Length: 477
Image (cartoon, rainbow, N blue to C red; front, side):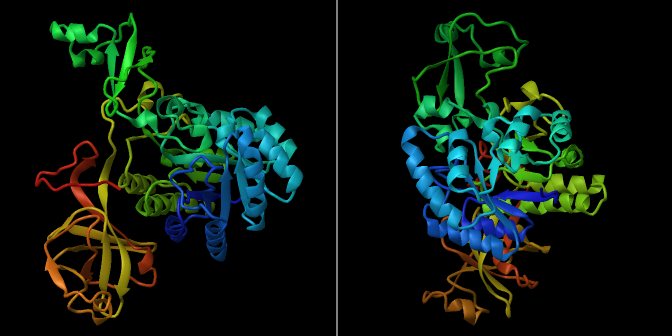
């Protein structure tokens, strides 16, 4: 049994895997389309792509786990086993699985395969963990609904199995992620890997006579913020993009449960989780950007390194970690169930948009190290005079944009050959348009190809408020 502490990062693409490894991941989990719960936000559609990812991660001495955690219908069993035969040959470090039948078939046909039990299996008690340990599973990924006391008891009762827990990222409102909303609303089964994230859509709530009351002037939207009064009659939701499609719902004193959840952030509980027996600290986010993968990995790497060195995570370091993860897209943070049941505090009722302190400004795609000229893929609007920060795995440096160019840079013959078009100065750059070229007052070093560029705003930016005071369009990554 491995007792080394591990930072486990998501890998939705080979590009994101490269950033996660560069910024501190000990291990990567990557899904296989059709057989993982991220079938859509996933570039690994062919065995060759998966092999490339496995080989890349192993070349850095890191581990990679392939996620195959669907609950299969009959028509997927044969295809799953055929795919498993191909995946076993690639020698990943483990397979993350859920379905007991598929686990049994895999162990029968591929006894060398190491299996980690997915959080989708609702791993909530020590007896269940012991069952799977006795069956040959080497690691159990615990349900998000457990508190630290329960985790400690599981470890005490079953000490000879690895335990993994989520410490950061989006939280599904359904129990251990086993949601039927997507299937109900858009006929896409979350348990088959095609979730449409229906819980994050924007809804309105209607009583069966609400429209009549509104016409009579007796119905105000602010009434829902008053002290709870038991509701009588039938109530319905209307999703923002599906006008006049009224969906019946139930509601109690804690609200309507299919609304947004805040995001998990366990920075303050890493030490308690370690003491309770957790060895693998998992971050959610296979469909998020390399910006997210880089900065979240960098933050948790610092905390895990402090614990590996036998020291406590200082308050100063925790503050820095929280500042770092707050610079990425989030819906506000809670520690999940680790301290207690968050109840209504888990829901984001006041706003349905993401909040962050920084924006993903751009990604370095080429670099003239002799002249310190970079080519930048623009991720959010940039203007002359904007302050930006270049972050590499080992450093971060700031500058103010004084000049930027399209099609090359006057001081770089190397990058000027990138295009035959004439170099052109610009004062504005937009995402989805041409790349820009900047001169840096510093050297990016050998890891320039893993550079992340971010920009700061005076106030947190939200998806709901898409324009700043200058009416500049913002697109969050």
